[in-house]
Each structure stands twice: as C-alpha cells, then as structure tokens.
Image (cartoon, rainbow, N blue to C red; front, side):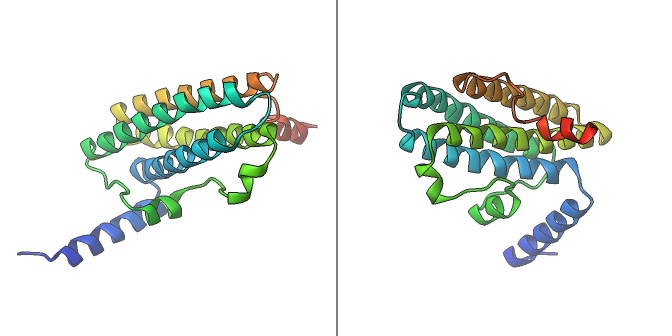
Length: 183
C-alpha cells in the first residue's frame, strides 16, 4: 500500500506525540537536540553582545562552545537515526521542545548576568540529559547512553569554565536552592 507524504508525516507526528507522553529516550533526546540548538543561538547572542573586561575571554570560550555544540548536535541527530528514532528537523520542533528561555533584551544584560544565564542553561540541559540517560539504559540503548554521558561531561566542563570566569566554583548558585530545602 502506497502512503502519501501527508500520511507519513501525520504518522510521524502521532508517534512523536506518543513518545513525548510516555516518555522514551528518543523523545527526551529530541528535547536535548532542541536545547543544543537554542544554546548555539544564545552563545552567539552573548558572543556578539558581551561588553567589558570579560568580553575577550568570554568570546573565545563561546567560539569553542558553539563548535562543540554544533558537532554534538549533528552527532546526536545521526545517533538517533542509527537508533531508529524520529529526529526533530524543523525550527518549530526545536522551539516546541526547547526548555531554555530566550529574549532579545538579554543582549543588554551585564556580562556577569549573561554568563549566569548560560551557566543555568547548561545546568537545565543536564536535567534532560540525566533523564535521557536513565531512559536509554532502561531501553537497552548503550550507544545512546554513552553519548549522553559524554554530553553531560561537556556541560559540566562548560559550567565550570564559565563559573571560573566569574570567580566561582563549578556549582556556585546551582545547588543553593536544593541545599535550602534541606534545612
């Protein structure tokens, strides 16, 4: 039986909707792809707008991070295809699955505020990565789990480097809310 393009796309959308409500490792990984995509845009925004004494070092770091995230974005998309998963391919999907906050006004923030935003973005990434790792392990997808563990390490490194630019330890301001809950 021949199916139309519309039928195939409708089936893809139905499967994607189902996978996001279950959730599956593939669906969670599409959130990660969307977050990577938006992070690349946000890295550019900061790189192009940061001012002050931190500007040169921040621009150099962000140039590296943009390349790293682009490579990971491409590799993760390929890995999802290898795993037989549906991969987000439209700007709308990235917008819908993204869990980071954008804003044109953020380019006017002080350099420290821009960096804090990027640090918190990477920490938000890690929430989705950790969930996807657990799902990949549960679904017996070792290649996906391994890739995601490496991505988690990359984000931890980005957090540490950006925190260092601000004179902070890696987890400064990220775990404080959790520690307050223990009192």
